[in-house]
Every structure is written in C-alpha cells, then in structure tokens.
Image (cartoon, one colour):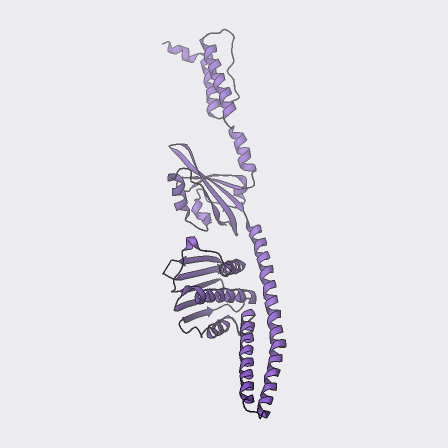
Length: 381
C-alpha cells in the first residue's frame, strides 16, 4: 500500500468531515470532483453516511435547545447518583456552589430511598419510577412530582434522567380547600352543639323540675314510682345530649386545651371496661392555634372509636408530643389489626388522612393481622 496516499488533500478533507460527524454535525458534505476516481467513490459513501445520520439522529444543539426550554426540572445523574448535567430550569432551584452534587443531597422521596430506586431501575428491565418528594433548595423546600428513568447509551455509559415538577402551589390550594371544608364542618358542629345545649337541654331541665314537683304532690299508689321513672329517663336523655355536644365540640378543648379534652374523652369511654387507655400528652408550644388542636383531637377521637368498634383490643396507647418546631402523634392498639393491602378507606380512615393533610403532617400506618395497629403522624411548624 502507498502510505503517501494518506497525505492526499482529498483524504484530509474526508477526515475533517468524518470528525464533524463525530461532533454531531451531519450537514457537512465531502466535495466531489467528478473524476469518478477512488477518492470520489469514498467521498460519495461518506456523504451517504452523513445523510443517513442526519435523518435518524437528533442534532445535539437541537436536543439541548429542547432540554433547556422545558419548564420541568431535568437532571442527568450517573450510576452512583452524581449529577452530571441539568437544564436551565434546574439551575433556578438547586443549591449553588457544589461542583459534583449528588441526587440524594437535595431530593427526598416520600415513599422510598433513592438508592433503592436507582438500583431497581438498573437491574429490573422496563422499570420506571413515578412518585412525589421534596426538593431541598437554597432557601426553601418545595413539593415535587418525581419521575426517574434509566438511560443506557452503551455498556460503559449508564445514567439516569430525572424529571421534577413543582407542585407546591397545587398542594397549597388543596390545603386551603381542605381547610375551608373542615372549618365549615367545625362551625356547623359548634352551632349544633350550642343549639342542643341552649334549647333542648334547657327544656329537658324544665321538664325534670316539673316532674319532681308532681312527684312530691302525687298521692295515688304507684304514681310516684312512674314519675320517678320519667325523671330517670330525662336524666338519661340529658346525659346523651351532653355526650353528643361533647362529640360535636368539646367545650373543654376551647377552655382548658388539648390534654384536658383528651382526658375527658377517655373518661367518657370508661364504660368500655375491657379496654385500658394510656395517655401521654406533652405540649410545649403556647402559641399553637385552636384549629391545630381541634384536628389533633378529631384524629385521636377517630382512632379511639375505630379501636373500640373494630379492633377487639384491650389496650390503646396515645402519645402526643408538641414542641415549638415539631409535633408527633403515636396511636396504637393491640387488637386484631388488618392487612394493609386489603385495607378499605372508610370514612374513619379518610377523615384521619384529610385532617393530617390539613395540619401538613406525614402519616404512616403499621398494621398486620393479629399484631394490632400503629399510626404515626408527624410534621413541622
């Protein structure tokens, strides 16, 4: 072979075009002389390769323009979670100054560990992750939807593409809607409790006094016994109304606070002699608002009622810890439990979930058949 032919200007021209193809520029063409020699044949073949690449490959500049113009936060991460590229939208959210930030430094998934997700994406063919989490920005934390897909350009070039969308405003509006619903419910409960107390309660008290007078003046045999029975019946009705008023809006909660209201709630549950209730309430936040206390009370009330009606337990533990920055509620019973996979979201569980969302808490159920139930709710102020 004549090695001097490699220095031919035509070969050098073809080499330059091939280098452009490697850079992603598929629009260059090798000049044809029309002599139909071996150089023209080689050039024509190279030009055909360029046309094929141009038709089937996205130009890098075109790709980057799309990558940077989308509103979603787009991240490219290596196999170990190190961020290797990000679009312009990401730059407005992520902490600055980190030369090689890792995905786990600023993204927290709500349900699973990021390292476990990355491993599943790598080893399970066709697996895709979609969920929600929190993005830790320089000056705030935002709620985001999270999608993670595995990319494999070659055996030695494996990475992940992460798509994040800010849903903080949607969640804020959702909470405002929930707040409006709950506030309306509590106002209606309060009005109904006041009506029962002021109207029906007073009427029954008057009726009782009237019967007592009749009883003292009644001389016929058996009449006094009948009237005494009526008095006892009125007492029973009045007690029932007081119980309804407490369930609708316990005055103790407004007047003496959460701990006393919970103690009274459990006292009223004492007729269930087979269940031992244990309460720990430690509140060290004098600025806590009444809406928060009402929702915590309703969550515990719902859990206690569910335990009494469904769990067949003999022990219920209630723990409420509230500090200036954090709160944690732990509720458990030793009943028959349930299978979470077959758990039906009845009104009781739905009410607990709704009120937890209202106080911006994270909820975690632990339940197994025959092992009881544990509910943990925690959040920040």
